[in-house]
Image (cartoon, rainbow, N blue to C red; front, top):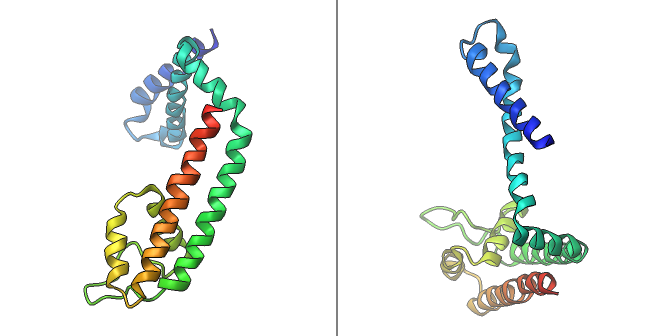
Amino acid sequence: DKMNYLDGAVVILSIFELAFLSGGGTFSAFRAVRIMRTFRVLRVARLLKSMQSMQTIIDVISRSIGSFCYLALLLLLFIFIYALLGMQLFGGNLNFDDGLPRANFDTFNISFITVFQLLTIENWQNILYSLMRSDVNKIITVVYLLSWIFIGNYMLLNLFLAILLD
């Protein structure tokens, strides 16, 4: 089996590295051999071949990958739109006396990450508190947050599941 040859090569290279390269002497130029350790991850592929349930899941994902690409582009477009909208509404308004919160809308990169954080609903209440402390109209803040959480989390992310189950 080819995977056995790969496993053997990785083990032999690791033993070679332990024996000769650990001293840091003249062989220090060959430290790139450590990259071969990453091939150990490929041993997990052997398990995927033997498990029938994993084979079924991989088959379903491979059949629906085209639809996933379109849905991922749609999700990226919505994140882009809401990041720009958040920059327009809240950019520069979160400078408080106790400092700028980590999740803010001042630059596009941070705004993009903040909108993704809202999409996953991970620690989104801190963003809510920061936006409510700002000088922006509270109704606009609530409409922005609720619309993004509803559209992003409850519609777009559930479309991923619908495509997977299709």
